Length: 200
Image (cartoon, rainbow, N blue to C red; front, side, top):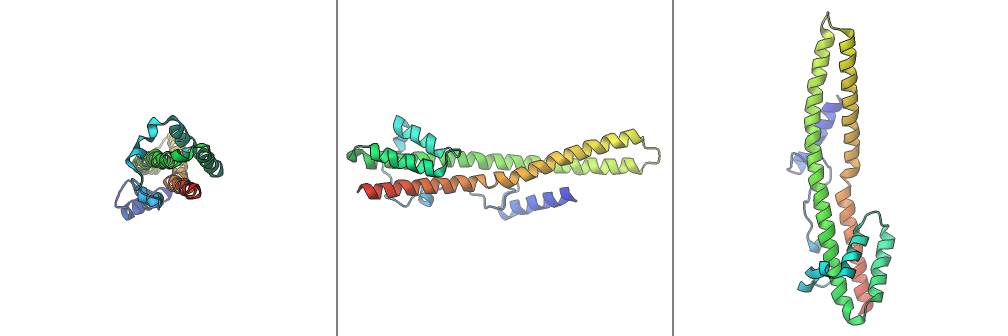
């Protein structure tokens, strides 16, 4: 029953997202657009060169890391802006926005691809577990079944089912990760926007 219920819920989520491998309640959006997270001025073409700037590139890596508390990341952005000569603020900060977007959108897309692969594996595991459960039931129904064999197969099935259910629980967290990354990116981009306003 657990397997059937879990499989049905995974299939339902996928159907809602038009992707049979998508198990999350959250809508699947493989890639973000810059406009979703940035409400400041249009970024200049030079912003795409952010990776060539050691200071900007290092800051992108630092603030994008989810292990860095958001308040600390926002402070690092503000401190970076304060350290810049006035004539470099707009250029460097727009490069930072582009860098954060490129870095975190790529990370988010990687997570989404991983979720789809993970869910597909779960579907395969569920099918195998149903097959194993059916075989164990058939074995138990035999009058001449070897009790040791029944016990061994039952233990194997129980262990495999526990692993499957633990993976299902893991999906609850993993499904939140793309949204967490998107929200972090928005918050950091907003900090840059506020910094540019203050610097005007």
